[in-house]
Length: 204
Length: 130
Image 1 (cartoon, rainbow over the protein chains, first blue to last red):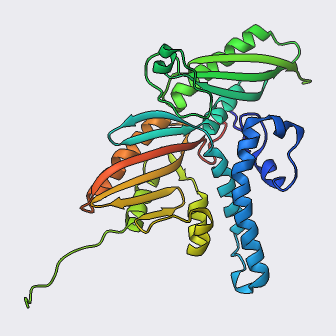
Image 2: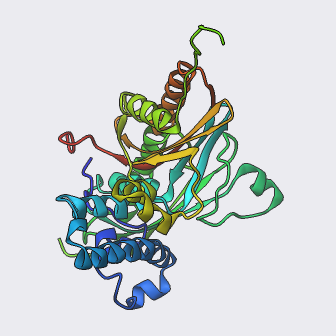
């Protein structure tokens, strides 16, 4: 399975790119995209801390950052964005286990990359707890809910571009199968509902 | 005054964090602990940490991906981890929780909750596309 080494949000935007442009006004996409807005908000705090550090360095040479500080900041920036929305996987006496929506989204995109002729694009994950489903309440992505064994938990909405000439229903089915296998294998929970939207064609 | 030496030990949240960190990284399927802003600022200096978390207390210690808190005789830990895609993340987290609790119990403290957040699921470096 190929894997994208560049950390990305569910909408496909690179976290590094958002960090690089954090001091600029948001793009048209970022103004509309909830995930980009959340990432920008979280990264702004880090940006302010690093700006404070830089200014300290300017006035006090003794505070010059050690080699590797930039890499450390980038590691923190990536991890901080991954911390965004979390999904509660299990609660036990030993403690709770959560997964970030970002980690789940990356896993889905990696699974999608294994299907020839399909390019994954935007991936959104909604959560529906069994109890909430019974009560008729939806929990939008970003809220923490319990993923129990009963009923659908995840609703994966993946937008893809397809290569011209492929049989789209077959490719979509293969993609759904790949994702439905990757989530239980990689995370340990059921895949729930996998919605695939073929929104565009791309040139091979 | 008695000549008997006083016997006692002080277990710090830093020690618990160190134990938890080592135990976690030794658990099969764990790739790394994920850094946090709090841990990063803690490395730069205590005063900078207050930029992010002005209300931090001495009983809590944060380092990259690990937060350890001691309340009374109970130690609680929060871990931010990345797991190997070849393993099932939930199973890895369960093993981490079990092992860390066992490590804490060796200090004489009561192990409290060990909360785990999986922040990334990736190929171990050098094994992608194999």
